[in-house]
Each structure stands twice: as structure tokens, then as C-alpha cells.
Length: 132
Image (cartoon, rainbow, N blue to C red; front, side):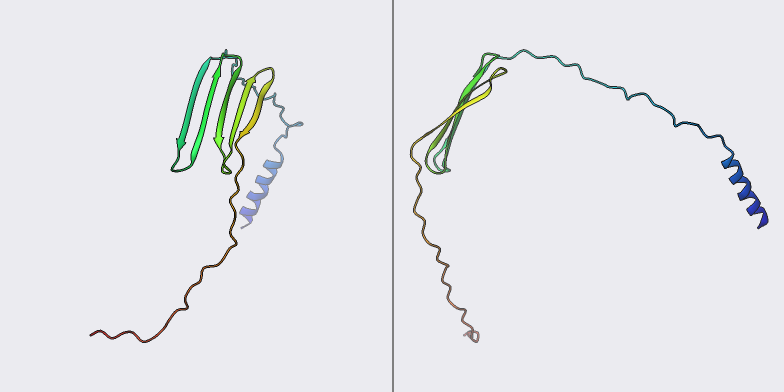
């Protein structure tokens, strides 16, 4: 038992006697990695599509074109109130995104009926019918 105590005390003396650094180690700034970047030239494009499904009530379209510097186009959507929203836009690096929103048609709001809870017949309980 005494040997264990002496061994533990000896280990504590060895650990405490180890030299300590006067200042914490200093590290340089972390390396910075930057992906190479370059401005890609604009690519001209032109596309258009339209979807109309009378059964589901879906009606929208989009057309857009670009000369590589200025992008312009429009899109239209049939709104639930019966109107058609038309957005005509241009976008470039100087003016940003500039949109003009117009509406065709008149909004239609159907009359609402007051809520009436359904009428249920009360359950009827009785003895089961005998089989013949």
C-alpha cells in the first residue's frame, strides 16, 4: 500500500517538474483558398411555352429572350378570380429587374351561401331481425 502511495507521489513530482512553455504556441493565419472566377459572357437565348387545361382550369404562358446583355419577356397567369395577370419585364446589369404588371378582365366573386350543417337522422336501435 505504501509502495502505491510512493509511486503516485513520484509520478506527480515528475509531471509537475516537466518544463512549461512561457507563452502559448502562436499560429499564422489560416490559408485562404479562392476559386478562380471570371465573368462569363452572356449567351443569347429565346424560348416560350404555354399551358392550357380547361378541365383543371389551368392557363399560363411564358416567353423570354436575351441578346446576351438584356433579357426581356413576359408571363401570364389566369387568376382564380377570373382575371389574367400579365407581367412584362426587362433585366440587365445596369437597371436590374424592371417589371410592369397589368391585369385583363374583371374580377368575379361568386355569392357565398351561409353555412348550414348537414342534418343527420338519429340512430335507431332495436333487436336484430330474425332470419327465416
